[in-house]
Length: 154
Image (cartoon, rainbow, N blue to C red; front, side):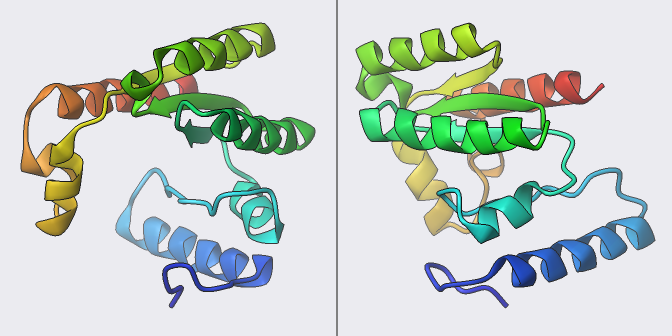
């Protein structure tokens, strides 16, 4: 069991990924979604190993762009196709634009931009996804991002 904010190693991430793959095969699932840790350390590299698409989610800050760039460089080093989503893009429109320009220059698709929405926190408190909690613009945006991910994988 991985605890929130607890240290973990790449070996542990690899073990959990292997168990997820076995469970997916037994259940007839087509995909395994791996939520990687922030940064570029061993757990992130283990999360990226053998994936078909890395979806980098960032917020519109200079440090967000810097961190996203580092992850995308690691993914690129391993030849992993990458897409990016900007979370809370409307809190800093200028930085969101810079992130989009960066992605355009690097030929990385922007899968979507999610606006700040208090319903995200409310849905977490209820133990639900945003899509289960509401059918508002944010839920529709997330559904659109999922469709873009499916398109990138086809």
